[in-house]
Length: 141
Picture 1: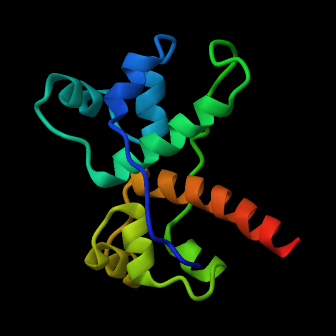
Picture 2 (picture 1 turned 135 degrees about the horizontal axis):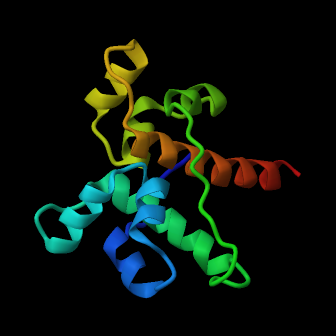
């Protein structure tokens, strides 16, 4: 699987664009606490690449929803990112690190069981798997 480019957006921009979107809903979808969102909104911290990539994926879901104001909810499903290495042969640890916006050291630590991926990395892995499964399914058809 060839990965060359990933889009990112600041999650705070989602709150500004979609008035119906609450901090609680967005925090849950991103796998972070509301205090993290508050810090980003006040400029005390900036969201990491993983969060910005996940926010972009969430924005794509909102953009294709037929009626954005009613009955929209984000999935909060997660998978261990290491499962992507097993599911997509030829997908390297380096490519996984790039896709998730984390370091190769982090991926190696997850693979060896030294650390667990963050909830945000697990959420992004699930979103990417959903997207890539559709791409693989279409290209094989």
